[in-house]
Length: 104
Length: 227
Ligand SMILES: [Zn+2]
Image (cartoon, each protein chain N blue to C red):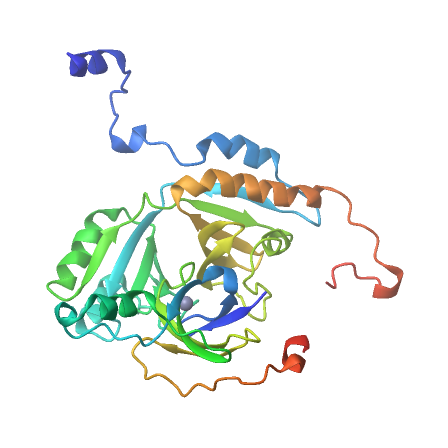
């Protein structure tokens, strides 16, 4: 069981949350001006880093609010959570998988 | 005409109105709930408290409108997750940063109208949600152990006390879980269409406590309840 620290409710079981993909993807200022390729890029293309990744989560079985989290995609460790509207924190890509971290 | 046929065939008591003709979501299980009651030192009982008035509020808690609604309720709006506040006959549960649930002994009318009037043109809503959920009450020394089988929230008294209410899940059913005393007594508020499943789920969880507890493991001391 993974505990996720909802900014509103505190630590809760992972089962209460749903995943919402990469955070801080801005909606295009003027979608009409985009080429099809640019529009497809906004709709479908997301980063897939090894290491820390800022992503959206929703506490559907609790306060029903969206928030953001930084999760390490290698260890699944959730490093921090913060409310919608906060600036994106600095994230560290992981270049060398750390096997110790997973077995810990 | 179809409408005439209906009127001719349905037996309607003289005093009938919407209140007399309603059915609660688990009234067909009331007898089973009574039969499932466990007595003795590991007691636990389950019952439905039907037709409780519930009113949903959406309002910015820092706004003047929130203060106006608090005045009507005679209670401040709860400030953090888990907290409940109490006015005359009303309990207010925290549901989200700008969302609250009023559970009251009063009828929805005229309270909903009074709250709506005080909200005025401010952003927010006041909605009678009484038919959305029913109330199952699980009570007795084994009640926490029954819930802990399928609820991941920390229900230990150091973390969860009378007057605490959270939205979470019991089994697969989303519920508002509210502890009302240290018997302990819990009120579970499932949406009406989930209530049958949750009632049967809880009865299944209660059944083991009717049996004698297993003797304590020789290395765990004399108290079998340590875990
Ligand atoms: Zn939450």
